[in-house]
Length: 190
Image 1: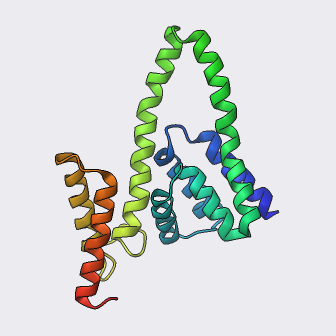
Image 2: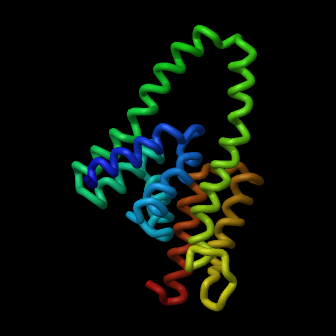
Image 3: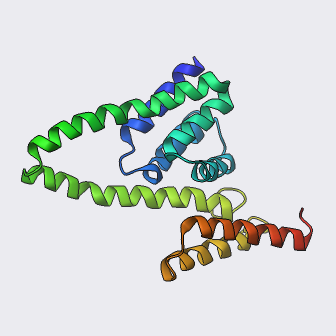
């Protein structure tokens, strides 16, 4: 039963996550956190981090990680196949249709209409990652001990470095990791 749930959960993610990995994050969260409770918000934030740091698409990495956590290698394979099948079918179908009808105004309009939806899904994915990082409870609440300033400062500094200086995102990630390590060593958390 777990294998079927993994397959169907990630089949839905693969079928409805248009716009790439970041757009898939809200859908993955809806399945693995909200619907099935396989991960909590903090674990999901860790999942996103791991998916970012490993090579490959975020949705595939997430499916593989969740499947492996729940059912070992067979679970990883089932979840990964589930998330990949829709893309293979859609891309093949779209390639055939696009080459045949790419000049039709209705097709151009449909692609233009999808852009705002994809942008909003990416924004939601960012908030899903950011909120549990800054607020320990996973919900926006400024109660005592719930708010973490350091991750917020790292986030703001990262956005500034990426936008203003056009730094390589991997360099920014490594720099944030080093800064966090140095701060934790300095205050004695490690």
